[in-house]
Image (cartoon, helix red, strand yellow):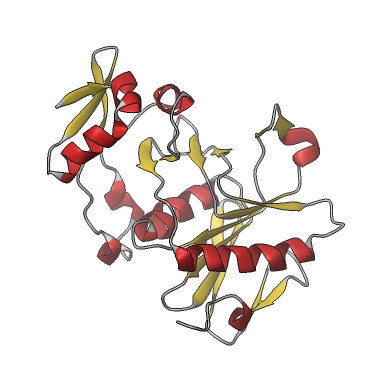
Length: 241
């Protein structure tokens, strides 16, 4: 089934229902196919596969992305030409996000850098891709807000980003975003797993992974980029689980 970007925006729920029935929705712009809506398949078991295996021909241009999202109430991300609909986070995700943002904001109090939380668009350029990506990290730290906030939009590069895993975003956060963040100039990336109660901290240098540390429950996580940014993991995860 083919549908224009305008019709998709106006009747997204109806077409999403068709997808849940197993139908394939082809999104068109100017009578040309630009993207597909497909039934969700749990790909959490392929986290260990290489990034090269994700070169899927499901691409949408940055201009088409802007047109799709300009009048939409839904949240989207665009990563290396592939579009993702942002699902509403569950309780554990929100619990951990609030706990982390409290600790991170306390550290940056009276600091030139500041922390922000999703939803907040960040435009990033991967040197391997011709067009930019647009992501909404769960938490980000920016230090260039004085020069990179224009008309309320952030146009710079965060120094630190945090993503909290969910079943629907696990492979995206651990593979696609890891690659994007390392190639776009971000210095540090935290991946938070609420199920295993562990946090992985990646440090990037020259747009490559320089080192990473895995912190488990009851350990103290330490930022490589910010000296003194330390958090007791027991204060982050829900102890009632």
